[in-house]
Image (cartoon, rainbow, N blue to C red; front, side, top):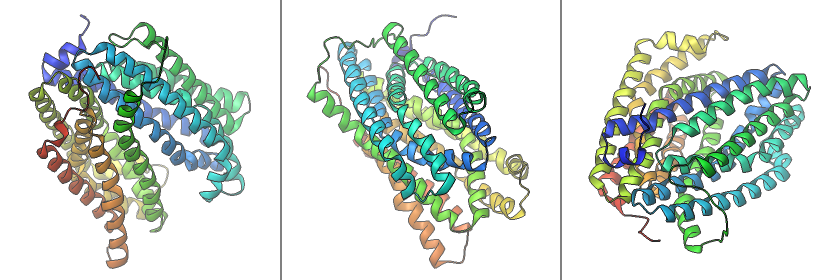
Length: 455
């Protein structure tokens, strides 16, 4: 099979082919991570319910800290793809080295702060007794892996900017498999329990980062990382932070929002919380293809904007919308057609009539808005690829904090809808935030170049 010139494909090739080749590995990677998380949870659950609860309990904290690092990698993908599109390859290389060092500094800072504050964070979250002990053990070790996690995010953004999403996916798959193999060895063979699960994760992350470094030094097609004679460049750091900060705020704001959202939903009772969690697992699987297309759109939009090909950017956006709507509609029709069977797959271990009834109600509501959730991902890809991350931030934070959470509260205290109010709030927020995304798209404000040649 002939080697694909991804830059040529993105700038001049068939757009559906470009979207497919760039997005498909991202979809596969999302599925791999979903399956890996499931396998990881199975091993830890064999230790006991408290240990399993501890790893779930601290996950929002880990995600909150990691989301700050994701912002820098979003900035990287956006800036680098535009420079590559403009054939400013030397400038792209300089930005890549600034990106890596800046990210390393942030990751070390978060790792040290997180490690030191772990017991206080857990106490603040209400963790007590054995839950607090196991949570602290797990969280502290996970913080030590942050430099590797942050580095890989940046490696991923550098490769994605070049249109190569396949290599990061292959490396992620190997790392996930390695973690699944190492988990039982460290947990049971070495009798390290929860600490063993965290150590297995950090070792997998470290090897993944090392593999990424080797690829960047030897096998990256356009950007070859070199830190020889490195000096901080104020203008570049400013630009990275300018683009990255809104993305970080969007990610961390969404992470905090989901923590608050879960606490509100829990106030309706365990049946409602279980129904909510179960249906979200179903929709997250359906949403993997649209999310992959949205993420892939970032480099396609960035490179074509860098090459001053706004007609190609428009074409990419419109064709990504068509693909996403088609895939989302198929998913929505399938789960509406086989709603009871779909619920039964996820309720095999707990035959609770109340959970099943609430789950069916939520599933039917959310299925109608699955195409809108797909559109949300496409708007995110467009705004992040263009470097106007303030719009993607507004969508992420706005959907949760300004629409969903207030609506849930209004429905709870002003109506007799009960849990149905949550489902209506979820669906309505997806619709309203897509209206906002469309208004920004129509305004053309996102078309302003964030990178000028030679800067």
